[in-house]
Length: 374
Image (cartoon, rainbow, N blue to C red; front, side, top):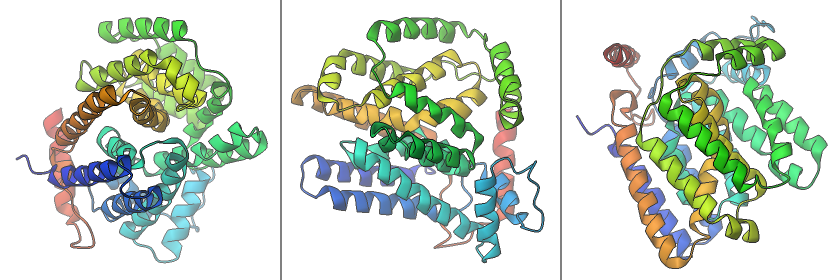
């Protein structure tokens, strides 16, 4: 069947219409922000048991209790406390997801309103390129968005506040530690020759599927220990590769677009150094570690917001005729990615506003989906 993706395609259509209104300045930016956030929040905040990790999060929520505090096992104390508190005051799982999605929407809006030149197009790219983060990574996304709130303080050289925000993000997911990279990468643009060299090396590694990093990752875990050690070991056990996909073509295209327009980007500051640099860090991680789906899911996704803002802002720095061509290509990409990504039974959309999901059916669908993939 090819109807699982219809609700998502309709949502994307709404965001693209909002993008047109925003681009033509028919509707003010504050109203665009409000309606974009509202549509995103309602659609994903009231979602039923879609995706895969609802199974783990529901189990985690159902067993959360302040009477069973285990500091050693609760690696992310902030997320653990939030979960236990919401459970204590009477939230059920659906309203737990709703509340977390509300926080995520507010945090996401707070970043893109400052750094993206087209808010609704940024939402559309977020949905079509990173559904895993939105649907299956409650604490990861929350941690990332908290850490990104440090960006304005880094720009203002208020480093103490920025550090506190990043530390707070680590309480929701340990990988928040990697956002200390915001400091060195916010100073200067990476020079083009270095980017080209890394792209060539990354391309060689990607196409020959060289798994060179096991020792490196294990060493990283040994240095940091604790949760990072656990994550590194789970990464090195994964042998699944992404291979040649539409995604890699997309990344090369946008990397070329940014490099081609580097001087204009630098002149207009439409992308600050940190957004430009971490756009490419996202791509480098994808290329260098393509033999490990687990590594990409854990680490490249940390920098998703720099990637999508990089795409959006680069489009609007182009001359008008080029802008129209690239924008049409991006819209086509958005529809194709949405159609392909959401076209399976795990994404059979439901909302608890209308009807409560049948847990047994969802468990069966989830089990059958992964069994067929083996």
